[in-house]
Structure formats: structure tokens, C-alpha cells
Image (cartoon, rainbow over all chains, first blue to last red; front, side, top):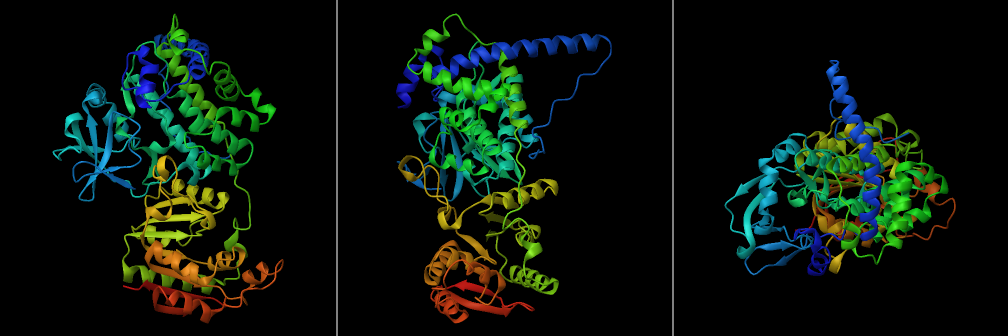
Length: 70
Length: 467
């Protein structure tokens, strides 16, 4: 089975990829990510501009959000 | 964990076979992970990039040591590492909503940190997350791969099936739908989640895209050649970051409020007086000091009130209950008080987790993950014997299989809680008496103590399994 999956996705040149990423999942991910990537790029540019004016970037968010209820 | 015998005298763990990067094996009772040559580039990058140190320091990855132990399969071995032992392996269908959500957020946090160091998670299985010292931790050191430029996240589908779909169903439909993970070993199918969720969830951008449209795309492109899809398309790391951050904000917005249930405010409505409550706690403390167990399972623990007697004495304690609200309250207290020795779990004792997956050995049954040194069954037996019609002899046999010592409370028919159970049914339980209890449990245990609880009808027993 693993051999079959590896053969199926060997186009990616990584023999260690043992999960089937799924064709539909793969495609939709590219589309969503392209959309969301624009946001990330804009945020990155914005924080560079803010940096020029002496604003400090926000610290990375913590691993978890403690809140689980509404 | 069940094991299969390898060519050597090492035991390869039966759940450890999907990923060719390496596997877990045990030798003389110690757990090791073999890292295969095919994974060497990725393992070296994990260590050299500083990602390993960052994740271990943040408490997100299980620490390990490289050791000189002989590998289980010499031909393929690159290294052998010894990971820190996880005190108890639990599964997603045994987690409260809060535990599940924190496990999802931990996975995404790991992926974001990995991307910043040129690596990516090559799987996002919920089974790779375990609760250690009260917090979710990735236990599969071989889950990382060097980022291949232009390639999307190979574990995206798995993350959506293992985390997003069950969490959305639990938060927005019914918390009991988390049990779908018990049926679907590789996560909740997205078309099923999409069907079950209300139409209004399509107004949420994250759920619309990652669940509903994703499910549609899976169906539409099921037979599409992935190589053709890839042609002319690539994914920048920034785009991947955007994707992960969006998944994170989608998960963060999923919330669930535990409600009051028959168990939710149990300690407020119980017929215990303050004196009786204190006596029960004192007796349990005394017996723990006498037996000195290293692992306690408190079954039917409600919100974990009595589980905290051993856990606060430094003893690792499982605190299980059938009620999702009780387990959620229990977990929230663990997080709030930063408790390290208590693991709340959602377990229905009348149908506890079976062996699942390939050959029924990939995910172990609840019973196989024991035995404990000491089991608590407090204010529980009447639910099992009367509500669930389990004869006392079968109960005694069951508890004897779970642990060497048993602290059990006998709740007689004259107790107001038991009277409630008879409101809607006939009393067909002629053997459910104190004598009947002592006879049945005497078949498997020696009665070391039997103390009537003051100002109540109940008796607390300390039992030791026959040698």
C-alpha cells in the first residue's frame, strides 16, 4: 500500500511522503492558500512599514488559546 | 501497547507501521524509536535547525535522547532514540472538547514554527498528540520533513479530517459527535461532516473553505491525476503560512459550553453531609498512603474531586467519566491550576474504548492500557449494576482485571440516589445487597477495610486482589 502511494505521488520527488494528500484536497489547498497568502504578504509589508516608524512587531501567539467556551 | 515480535528480541509496537521513516520498539521494557536511513536528512535538519530545541522548550514536542541501543532492524537503521515515556496513551474519542481543541491548536502551532525553520509536518494525526503533564504534546519525532519548495501541505487533508471536522461537529452540532472518531480511524470524512453541519456554517469562511468546499473538491477530483494538478502550480511558504493561520483562527472560534447534567452539579445535590464527604476523603488519603500506588484510575470520577487526592500526592491519575461536561470541567481545572498528574478522559464504562484499526491492535482498548495499581469506583456501582444490569459477579471480575487494589463504595438500595434509579423501573436485583456485594467481590478480592460512611447508607471498601 505504502509502495502504491509512493508511486502515485512520486512526481513530488519525496519518497518519504507516505500519506495520500488527496487530489481534491491538494487542489483546494492551493486555491485557498493563494488567497490567504496575499493577506500574509500584506501583513508582512505592513509590519515592515510600521517597523520603519519604530513600532515593535507583536510577539508570536502562544501555542494554545486557553478559552474553549463561548 | 500491543506488540509484534521482530526478528530480534525486540518488540515492534503494532501501531507503528505506517510511516517508513522509522518505528517504535521496546527492549527490556524500555521504549525506543528507530530512525531509518531514509529519514536521516530530515532528522538532522530537525536537530540542526534548532526546531527540536524550540519545540521541546515550548513543551510541544516529546524530548528524546540519542542512545547506543542496538536497532530492531539493522539494515535500515540510522539512529536509535529514546523518547520520554508518556504516562498514558489516550485517543481523540476519549478527549473532552477542550482537550481536543488544544490538541488541534498545538498541531498548528508546531506547523507554524516548523515552517519558519524550513520544515513542515508530514502528518497531522490526532493520535500523534498526547497529554503529558496536563498539556498536548507531539509524540512522533519523525513527523517532520524538510520543506520542498512549491509543494503544498501534505497533511492538510488529514488535519481537516482528524481535527477540524470533529471539532466543528462537536462545537456546532452536538458534542457527542466526537465519537465519530471511533468509527473512522483516519478522521471524520469531510463529506459526512459537511452533510451533518447546518447550512449556516457556510457563512463562516474557514468552515466554508476547509470543510464544505474541500469536501466538494474531494468528490469532484477524486480520480484526478495529482501530477496534472501540480503542473504549473506551486505554493509559496507565505501562502502555506496563511493557510495554517486561517486554520488556527477557524479552530479558535469553535467553542463549546458544558451544560449542567445529571452529573454536572453532582456534589451539590448528593446526599452527602459535609462530615461524610470529609470522612471519605480522609479514608482515601489514608489508604493511598498505605498502598502507595504509582498509577490510579478513578472511574466515574465526575469532575475529578476525589482524583485529586492521589494526583496532588504526586501519583499519576486517570480521571474518567461518561459525561462530556464533567470531563470538560475537569480538564479546565487541570489547565487553570497547571496540574501535572491528572488526565481527565471521556470513558463510557458500559462500552469502553475497544481495540481499533488494523487487526484491532492499532488503537488499544481501554482495559489493555492497564492495569492500574489502584482503581477508584466511588458512587459508581449502582449505575453499573442497576442502570446497566451488570451482575455483581461480572463487576467484580471486571474490576479485578483493571487493578490490584480497589477502593469501592457500596451504595445500597435504601440510598436516595439508588431510589431515584428505581423510579422508572422494577427492582429485579435481589442480589444487590451488602452481603451480595461482599460475596461477589470476595471471589476476586480480599476485603482489607470496610468502613460505613457516617450520616449515609453507604460503605467504603479497600479491596486487594487475591494473590
